[in-house]
Image (cartoon, rainbow, N blue to C red):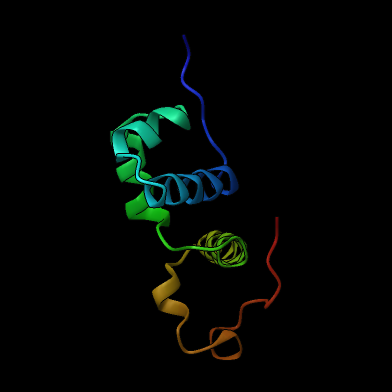
Length: 95
């Protein structure tokens, strides 16, 4: 059986399901089994996405995309902290 790669939106939804199930008195192990992931995956997801809402997740994706666009210009994002005008780079993100 192959591994399933969950999308970030699915992960946030499943984390919410576990919160609801544990609020109803189920253990974390039972709740993780009901969403068909291991406890290890649940705890890893909770560390990365815990407390995040879908709008925050979309913003995170946008920032990661912008970061990737900046690194395509040959520098690290830390070198562009002065602003786009000072660094003489385009302000648009290329996909």
